[in-house]
Length: 456
Image (tube, rainbow, N blue to C red):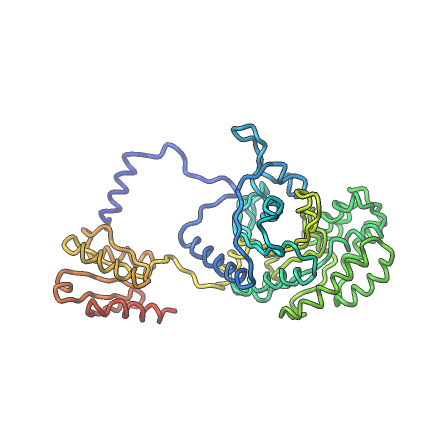
């Protein structure tokens, strides 16, 4: 049976066909209510973790001067969306939230108290090839600490990341940890000068994608001698207990610039993590972990889920020199970033959080002769803290109105008919069980509360 509302929509469509094809750009998406409800719930859980650790909210413009963004992204820089605006200025869409944070700290240094702990949850843009879990517009959830050189800050960043993942049902994530200066030392030991170290980082970072042979070819393509490429691969693919690996590296890298500092900082970090409640089983030293961005200067870390095989869900690291590109002096900083798209995909696939199709709790059925009373009931329930949808098509029959509420997934419906209202009552129907009872109007808020509480 076609309802009045559906008939009106069909008639309108027949009269006015759209002249423009409705579509979105490749790598971009609409988020329908069911998807947005889950996204907002996950974001709220992350926000709760960040704020419990004392992080303050921050937001920054979507567009930045292009010079703010360039020279910091490494290979991601070629993925940047940039253009000339109407005023002839070169501008770009932010590709992450860390570079804008660094600009903020430099601009507002007199207004911020260090250490400055901030979180930002916002979209970023990269013109990369769309694939499963990877889009051109995606959201990042970042928490950073500016102003502390201590490995305690890095330990807290890792802790916040682990707690955020646990909050959405992913407590089994493994955190892989390495140090950028350790990678530089390995490159120097193998005869690769510091100028080519960035290319070495990026090649190593692709190990899990292209395998040892692929990395070997990339290193040789960068001009790294075949023997040096093999030596680098031999070093970064070592596995074992962190203390054993670091002890061996301390001996092997003795005298190599930066090696002792990197090893000492990693030893401190591994000592702090248990004090923050992170068990030794939750993290590993991974000498092949590089992270793609050029601005990292110290420890880098990445959270991944291996069982089931999901891969990376977050990461980041220390970037003590990035703020200095705006200030002219270094400012210690570290932090973590979670990719919400991949996390949502995992949450949906494995049912880690309840799925909701609506935020509405109660639907109030109305009739032309009882519209004023129905509006009053909806108003009173909202005042009691309930989320209420009032029928805006009172000419529809009760069955059609209840069908609408059921299709939306609204759990409860209040039927305010003239007969019931004359008696000071209403009908309350549980659309999940199809049970209905009549009760005094004054009892309605309490009855709704009890039924919704049972659902939880």
